[in-house]
Length: 553
Picture: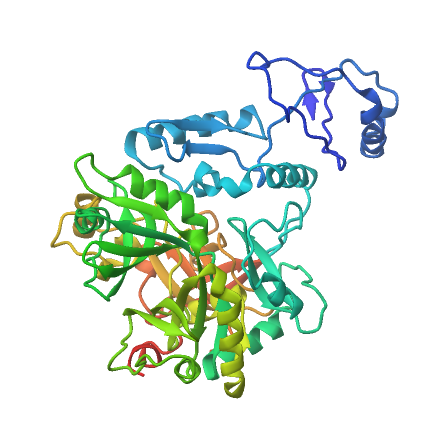
């Protein structure tokens, strides 16, 4: 690019080197490293192919210096976990151009407790202790080297991996599991029976047919997925119920009950989503998204009042989670336990301590795919034994392993919203259609702002839509258009996530749109890979809207 009266070139090398691994002097702020013209020569030769003037132009100055780079290339902006009133604004690999935005949003965060846009991808709490050392080194170098490469949906490069694995990782790998990294955890995306590996594309790739089979197995028979990556906490103490009631918008369950709750900011933004199981009067088992492990632990910890007797333990690494789900899941589980699994004795949204194949565990009758099923939360060292027992017991019922691609497809068919996509601090429960999860009869953090939004109305609403596409699906951030409005005035919203529903044979998506376009039956267009695709707002879930397959079986 132009630099005053000259030109400047700055290459991203494919053989990057780390610097300052043994520490950096605090006085090293504007200092530089010795120039290295030899390293630049290959890049100058490439630049000359585009701009021949580089072949004859003289070199005025060679600047060599270090640049910060995080494992995902995003900077660290926000609260430092575990500390009060300690904020981070660093690791900006782009440089000074990010300065104004960083300052603006950090100031908003410090003053108001949230930012006007969702900055979750910058939050320092997106990393845990697992990211220290070799992971950060290898991943940061890899991210630097691929800074301007094309990044495909579902692509997870191998640098720095694996870091966090479950006891059945190698077993799943041996039967074709294709993994993604989520908060350090290796999670199976899908099972590659042909051994082709995932062929990345912006369109539906070679995983499509395999995912269709996994979906069919779960909907018609029974499936098993490793969801150990869930963030898990134990919250106890004499004031535990009072504490949870204050920071959660929904009511707290009775003993044995399970509740879906949302934590809000003072301004009503959705800070987090969790599932709470009440084990005893003052003992709660709390689950949230894998990527929220440190974020939610920090959020909970920072909101304990000095006078409250509340203890919070992060027990994520202590428990494995196997999710057994599908119409034959009760048949499989009944072969391994003496517990009464009937609908009368073990109802939907309930939890019990039972033994399965001789292993004591917490069984939660909940589902993110819309089928009868149980989450089995067990000691981590018993996971392989439990997995083998379930697979053996399920053989006669056609049990199948499934991955997160299938889970996403099935949850879209059920119109289940996701934290981080549909649910962020940018919006309140009123825009997201979560009013039934808000108990306005009690006092909770963010109540007044949420109630005000309810009374005054909203300027955007979440809609669930079917999309007419050929060979691609919404991923999130696609533009929603009003085809009847002139160009420049036709943008009415944005998508948040999407997937193909294999059971309903339809591409589905969530989107935030102007309220007048939120009525069921309304049609508009979504721009998917350069094509304007017709979309229709649906009134209810495309699959089993009455939850008959989920709760009354």
